Length: 224
Image (tube, rainbow, N blue to C red; front, side, top):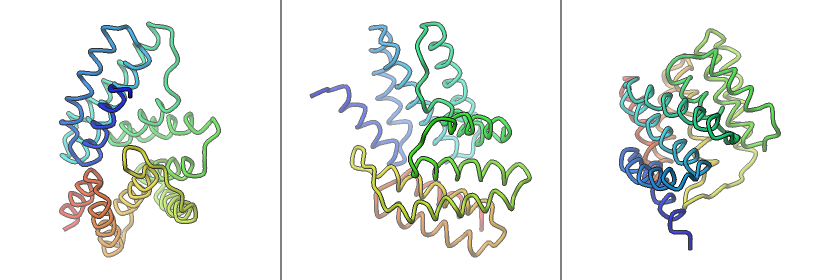
């Protein structure tokens, strides 16, 4: 058994349960171990997980300081990859775009997402990116097109009915709930927005996806 992999899975479960700081504490220990061993690919993968923790904390708390920490972590990853002459992970641009969106840098985010989409993706991956790009476009003045893209994304997830289980959590469900959260933030109809957020909150609670539940509840409070 790879004990480090099991340790990372434990951190992943904590993060998706809405406990990003607890997850980060575990990943930081792995990061220092990999750095000491000069295992740079594992260093980069661990730092991406840490960056996601900062992003989730920023979205839950509404504080940009955590999002800036996520962005700084991602920039450090690129610096390490260039210094050690190794390739970035294929999903680097995806995570970078997510933080750029959260910080309101929508043009940069759209470019990063499009770069990520330039390689072949599964229908579920395409649906996920469609949701992200739709939200970024809607937030950047192309509201009608963005809403259309988000609705198409949700239709794609509904048609798929596939699961992608990791550490006991369905990644595709996490993505689908994320798409609903984004749609709720940009539709003009508050009743529809409330319905979407309530659906996310209930389903996230049922599936023990605490991060999504906290995001939905934060948005519901702001809606009222």
